[in-house]
Image (cartoon, rainbow, N blue to C red; front, side, top):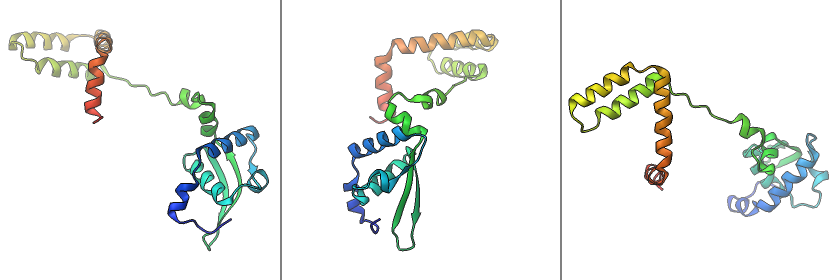
Length: 171
C-alpha cells in the first residue's frame, strides 16, 4: 500500500462508478469476505484504499486492515454489509422495513394542541371557552378521530403545506 495521500488527491480518487463495481463484486461473494489483493490485483492501490475507506465510512462495507506506524495502510479483506446490499438493491431492503418510525400522539397531547389553537383564535371569548370545555371532556377515541380528520384536511391543502415546509426548512 502507498504512503498517506495528500488531501487533494484523495478527493480526486473517489469514483462512483468504481464504488458501484466494488459493491457489486462484493455482493456476488456475500457472505464471504474478499481478499483485496486477489480480488483486485491490477487496481491502483491508492484508488482502492480511498474508495473502500469511503464505503466503509458509510457502513456499506467492513474492511480488515492494518495501519502501520509509518502511516501506510494495508488492506486485507473486505465484506459488504447489510446496508451495502440494501443500497445496491435500491429497494431499501430490510432497512426500510426495520427503519419504520411510529409516531404516537397521546390524547393529552392532541387535547393540548387543540386547546392552544382554539385559544389563539380571535373568536369571541365565550365561544372559545365553550369549545375548550368540550375538547377537555372528549374521550381519547374522539380526539383520535379529530386528529385523523385534521391530518386529512391538511393533506387536502398540500400546496399550502409545501410552501410552509419550504419556508420552515429555509429552502
